Image 1 (cartoon, rainbow, N blue to C red):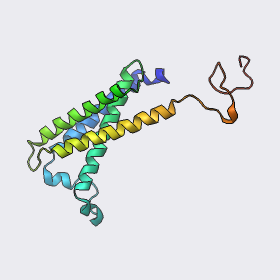
Image 2 (tube, one colour):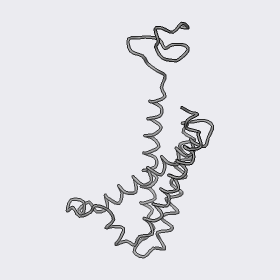
Image 3 (spheres, helix red, strand yellow):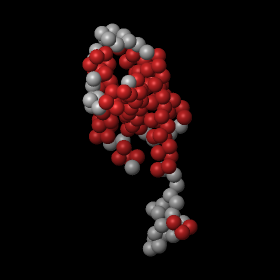
Image 4 (spheres, rainbow, N blue to C red):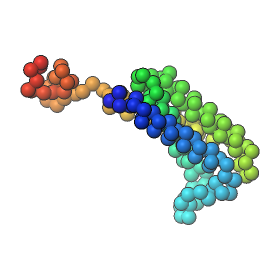
Length: 166
């Protein structure tokens, strides 16, 4: 599996997805305040009443996905898929710095302003996404547990009653 993740197609795919997502965030921050608030399916009276909550949800989702794409891109270009705290902090920091640059960019757009709370929400979205991703990877790569107390095959790491090596 690790070899598959490091193939050129995965590297190009994750890198392209990351650059595309960053361009989407940049595009959304170029929209004037009025236009940005009308973006999406906001015709419903319930959604219109959400107000600031939908902005927070959008920031959490955008920067959570950004953090996951940064993590996947780094994993595709590295020689190991490491899930240490230091590695996670680097990804969260990169997402946060992109959020800071996004807020700085918004300060030049008519009807938009820079918000420290948006920067913090961006960091929270990145942190939640990376924490979820790391926990998922940890659970998925945990040593194989077989039912009924069977021991894994020494050759294939799975239970195989016909294996001559077991």
